[in-house]
Each structure stands twice: as C-alpha cells, then as structure tokens.
Length: 243
Ligand SMILES: [Cu+2]
Image (cartoon, rainbow, N blue to C red):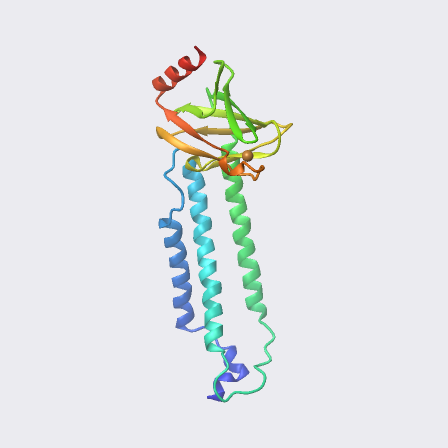
C-alpha cells in the first residue's frame, strides 16, 4: 500500500485516464457552447455576433469549470488519508511545468477573447446608412422615446423591422441602463453626456426593455417594451402619434 505514496510515484507521466479526461473536458465545452442557449429568441441583426461570442465564452468557461472541479475531486479522492496512515502528507513543492501551463494558456485565451470582443464592439459602432433617429430620455423611473423628425413622443420604443435605428440616450438624473435582452444590446443612459446605440430589429413582435443599472427605489419597475412592426404599420403609428 505504502509504495503508492512514494514521491517518485507523483511525477510519472499522465496516463490514458488524463487523456480521456482532457477529451471529455474539451468535448463538454464544445457541446455546451454549441447547444446551451440561455437567452430569449433573438430579434436584432446584431444578436447573431453577440450570441456567437457568448457561446464561445460559455463553452470555455464550462470546460475550465469541469477541469478545475475534476482535478479537485480527483485530488480529494486519490490523495485522501487512508486507514492506518498517521502523520504528515508528502512534502510536495509544486511543478514548474504545471504552473507555466496554467498561467500561459489562460493568458492566451484572455488575449484572444479580448481581440474577438473588440472586433464585435467596433462592428456595433459603425454608423448605419439611412437610420431612424430616436432620442431616449431616461429618468427615475421611466423611459421616454422621442422621434424629433416627426414630433412624436412615446413611453415605449416603436421601430420598423429591418431599418437601422440610432438611439441617442440621455438621463435627467442618475445613471440608467437601457437593456433589450432580445436584441442582446445594452447601453447606459448618463446625465450630462449623450450615449448612442445602433441596432436593426429583425423580427416583428414585442420585446421587454429593462433598466439594468440599480438607479433607486423604483429600479425594478423601470420597464417598458420595444414594439417592432412592419414598415407600413410603423408609418401609421407615427402618423397617429404626430396627429
Ligand atoms: Cu433606471
């Protein structure tokens, strides 16, 4: 029994068990990234690239979770105190190879994810052609959407499907955050400084708008909706609102 606790036994190379475990971790990460979907159905053109990025991150996070918890469980079971063993455990002093690996590989992953994320951010920031301009005034605890070119004001956001929208956000008091889960988009509304959000709705329907920044006692009820309509229905809505 005691030979399994010799120091030289610790440094033997990883066997087929480790190879199988590595494959399991990678496979599970790929499956989770590919098939687990935590968000509501997408309703904007921008959603596809954000979902892709999120899936990659979820897959990597799940693989790392399995790896860490798996190694932890293995260590707990394999190196537990056994009957008849008294006294201290083995005097182990780490492994340079292992420490280099768990420093270098996550660093590479983080740099790569930063680069991919930056790409998405830059693509979201491109000013679209022929946009509909909507101004959003956020206050404790409501949203107000203004269509300055049409003299219309509304408590919910109405947009035509397929047409790019530039939303210009401002707050009259504290910081709020305009979030449409179905669009996968979120932008802060700040006092004193205008922010901007570009999007194109891709599916007709109604989608919740949530304030995602704790902004006071009524924060939880600071909700409204986005109504995405066909071009004609939207024009009718505008005409009724301005009339
Ligand atoms: Cu708010």
